[in-house]
Image 1: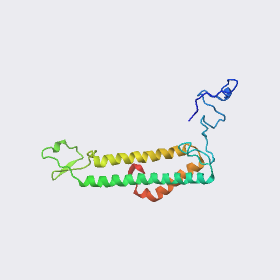
Image 2: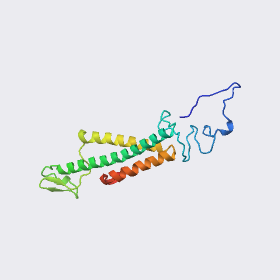
Image 3: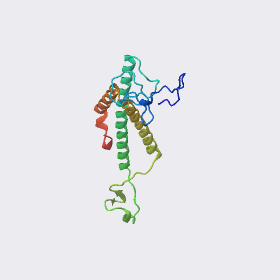
Image 4: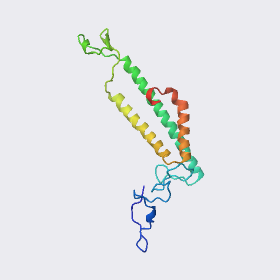
Length: 187
């Protein structure tokens, strides 16, 4: 986060060289950095903050722990995508086992691709009935999966090569182990 407070020294100057201020108002000391000091190019530094300034590795061991966390988080992300796919498949099978009764004489309301089979509706039906027991857990599952995905995106956006490779490693092993359970557009 940029510091917008005015810092002045004894002679009343702001302490910022006016030649380094761009049209956006930031202090750019090099062409590859943002005002907050975050690099705009991939780099290999070991002291990049992850998610907050409180999570800044100060030693190689702390950096390795951060890398291990990111591998595990990316692995967990692929697990969540696979779990959601399995749950959706189970719900679809259960919904297909349920049949919708159609009142006699109302068959004219069915589209040409749908028909009746002994008073039961057959064919494709675009929507499923809304149910608390299905839709609320599915919504929470999507919130958690999206949250983990956004955390991974933020880690990659630090442009730290180690963080980037850790995320890719976690996705690789997660896909290797859980990929066979992912069906449809989530893959």
